[in-house]
Length: 349
Image (cartoon, rainbow, N blue to C red; front, side, top):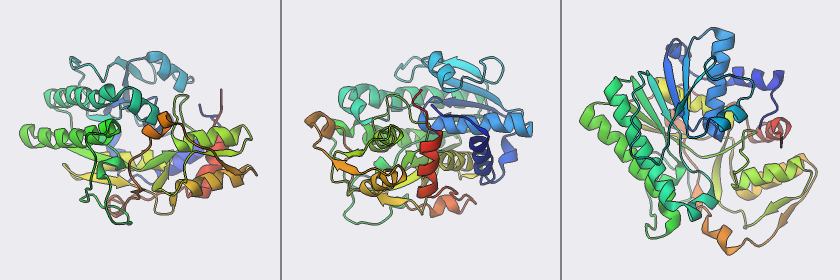
């Protein structure tokens, strides 16, 4: 949970300044799934800010299974006043929504390594069943556009250590249950472009790298989330691998401004990488930065076999963000600033 204060909302405003043509969503109806998660909650904060500070008059629909999670994530806002809660189960093939909205942001997906190993079926279905129901609804209500939040994991393993462009695809072992996440993301992207082709539905796809920030959830067991909890408690940073995997990191508010940039300005049928060119580092490097911030050490321990099964299969997941930057977007929080803000704004409560 975030410690909201004046400085945090100033950062929200700075992120908004990097979204070209932001005025295009004024007065629009926007539905968001996965709104209590790390990425989409930052998008919601931007929309709330636009309504309160810029009189944007955006009608916000937050869809999910558990309204209590939305209330917990946004305790200062009220269902029925600042947003409308919509009951939505991403693993249910029979969602029958009929909500006349202009834009849909689909961010409902298992995103935690432990869940990939214990619920691989549900992980796949959330990316197929739930998405299909909203693609169908978007077509039915003539929505202007649907944005699907995919993942850098769609690239798989490529025998080159360089930032991946949107047309690069490598190997994924489809018989490894851990592939439930990247394979379902790949299939979901194809489902989006199938609707685009067959039903002339306007869709765009965002491919975030590794996102970090103060909006980590209680259940998030990704490496950067665990590092954050260690640091906030004043503990040494616990590493359970060599940490040599190269990744594109991006602060939550930068990721949120990127997604809204793609929603507003992206070319229909296209995918866009989200990466901060100043934050392409190894897991070990981000652990060391967090440890330095709280004057602690990085300590290496052996991961359990269960933990290893959930590890990302990619040795390199660095992303080339030039296509997104060509839309006029840029990241404004470098790694040092992002880590500092993560630790200052994150609350264990």
